[in-house]
Amino acid sequence: MNTPTLWIILPLLLSGIFLFLLNRQRILKWTGTIISLTLAGLAAVLPINQLFNFLFWELRVSEEMLIYGRRFVLSDPDRPIVILVFVLCAFWFLILDPKNDPIQVIPLGLAGTVLILTAYAVEPIFYGALFFAFLALIDVVLLSPPGNKPTRGVMRFLIFQILGILFILFAAWLASWIDLNTGDQLLFVRSLVILALGFSFLLAIFPFTSWIPMVTEMNHPFLAGYVLSTYLVGVFLFGLRFVTEAGWFDQNISIQGALQIAGIIMLCYGGGLAIVSKHLGRMMAAVVISDIGRSLLAISLFLSGFPLFFSLVIIQSIAIGVWSLSLSHLRKVVRSLSFDDVIGAARQWPIISLGILAGYFTLAGLPLLAGFPIFWVLGSSLRMYPSWMVLWFVFGSIGLIIGGLRTLAVLTKNSGEEAVLILGSSFYRAVIVTITAVLILLGLFPQVLFSLTQIITNLLLEL
Image 1 (cartoon, rainbow, N blue to C red):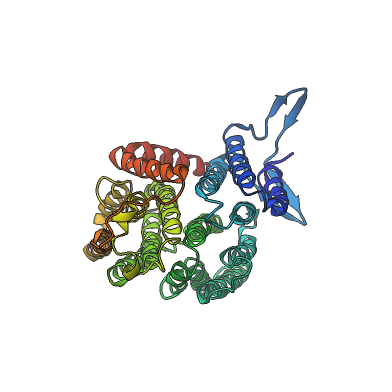
Image 2 (cartoon, one colour; image 1 turned 120 degrees about the vertical axis):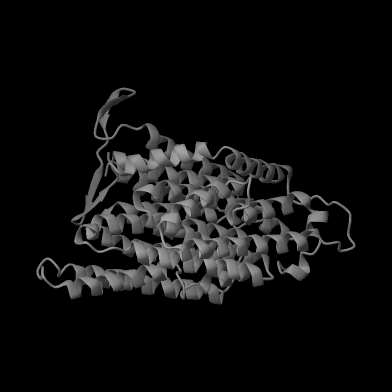
């Protein structure tokens, strides 16, 4: 037994079995949630490379698996990543409403989680790009349920991901020649530029951002939120390991400036999009784009920024989850999610509107919500860098707040319908209220989240 078999092969087989249980929606939902939590729990307590007793057997779980000459390694310091991806997977399965959202999220989502871990675990690391090609295909199938044609945003997403993967593989091939040409700095710079272009496609960094607003506007809000949350987290984890294992930090090549410029551009672009958008789906795109920028800024701080990055991952997943859940319920009773069709929604469906506003304002950085302490620390950490960077950071954040105030004004505007209506089951209304309360508590007590992410960072640094 080895860890890749337990956390990659086994859940991949289970996801295949789940495809035959699509008619058993509730059973599938709770089975997927329990299995994901169980795998996360095993990652927390299972001894690796140590003998232990299980019932009548003495077992030892090794940390690597060899397939066709490629090593797949999930060692003891990788536990936080395994726990994180499976807990996030269980969270999305838990909030999924089988009556309202496509149940294909369970088997395809579990398979996607496996592919993220596979890309993270494979050595040499550049082979991980191939697994993101399969992950992109799974997300395309997920965003285009049976009977629906892929939207333009989905097709553009697929094209950009394939281009990004090709650029990353080409950059890795060029970099493989550097050992043979130790004095060729030009070749090294070229491979680094091509690699940066590849990750720009994968992360939808400007100007390759157009597919995100298209997907959030034209596709099912729950599916769009799930894909954006999980796929981008997977790319960031893969990118972190790719850069650190490539050894480029030892080549006196600084990527900090490039990360910061890209991060500021994305944050300001998202803030501007929030100001001009008139669709709740495009508002989701605005904060997702801004969070990509904030994640790049956090990573640019390196060791001091990694806890901020993992805090962003957790908060973003929770906030987008409650937002997607609320939007998918609201979508059933309105013609579209454009501002003209959701006027006065908060007066008729207050709990659903609470989830929408709580998710948005958390990611916009409104004080007293969970996103604010993270963004405050991130902005404060940028003070040691050029002042223009802090200035644009503030402008981008203000743009998001303005977009949130516009959304609040639309949802609370008097539409002539004052009756309070019940939307969604009591369970999912309770989920929305509970998540909102969690976001408020994490905003009031941010040290809980910072302590957790500092532990994750310390463990990863043992790699």
